[in-house]
Length: 454
Image (cartoon, rainbow, N blue to C red; front, side, top):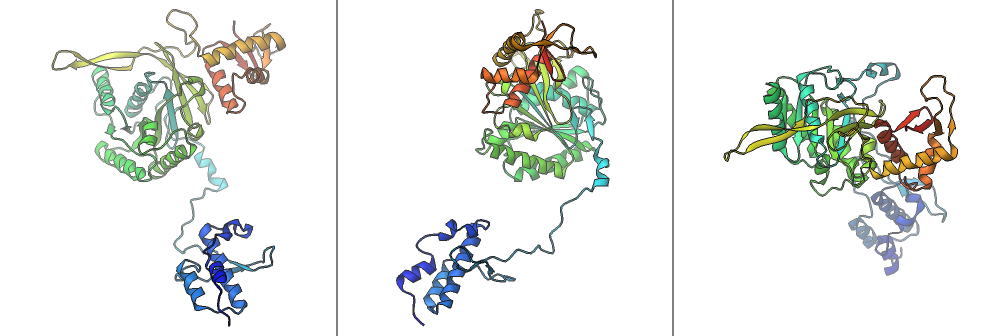
């Protein structure tokens, strides 16, 4: 039989290029499997052509032309000829190992067992769920989550949310861990609390690394041994620090989703609520800083705004309406004196409560609106003047004589004026505007109708 020419040898050995990458018959295969099949097909063609050259088989094998002959390997499987009439070969299907375990299934008739939430603070904190608490720097995010944790650990109701169980909490302070400890010391001194099952882990954790799952689970288990009770929730403050710890980027959906997957793996190991503290962007009306994959992953997102009096609003809830969660202000508390006699102070949430209804400023005037909601309100007045009509509402939810437009009419005007971006997530932008204006009682909404409150 003839020997391979140099050109034939180069073709069969695959040293010129990688034609399997351009062949549509290999689209469903991995690059390695496609290469194996292509080379196996070429060797088969050489054999059928009567070419027998010891160099060809040795060379092709040396550069990976044939798949490794592992135990149980059945060899390439022939697939139908392509458009050129040539036969080719594909890797045999991989059979499931006898050790493969099926994923856990919940069947239709058993789904009712999951209708009831495993609430810790009813309506806001539940096991197996994730809360994101966001706001600009200095808005009181960490102070508010500390107040929530203290109430949940003590089994006390929090701002109208009924305590369903007392449980342990672990705070993973990825930054300013000492500040968390000082705040907890304030609750001990001011409120006379002792022995609460709360612990602070003062360390940076790379949330993109799958090893973080084991580190967090092990830490929680250690806390449970010390507490003598199970841990119901963990806090990660700040979430962005955990993404950036080893070069991640919170603007990238890929990194946000990797971190979220690791958090889900944690909840698969331990039945806890996860509270994430994060930041808003430069434009607060656009919500959380970074990729909106974060918004899509969490069960509840709460945004804090305001100066002296802070407004915490639910801007996303999987099974609850957008609403005002809390109004609060911060107060300085003196813990003691340092070696120079100067006071040691920290800011915590004041015990003074405000009715979550009006969100007025201390001077009694309406609160100062961010630029985007302010522009949106002006656009609502315009579209109401141009297209508004009275609505005959027998239920009494719409005031008599008020001029209304539909939400679609208002949204279309915002798009026309480029107040919301048609190329971005304009529905989410519109929702945040509505929540901001409705919570400060500047607009009214009933069903599909909206009107400015004058």
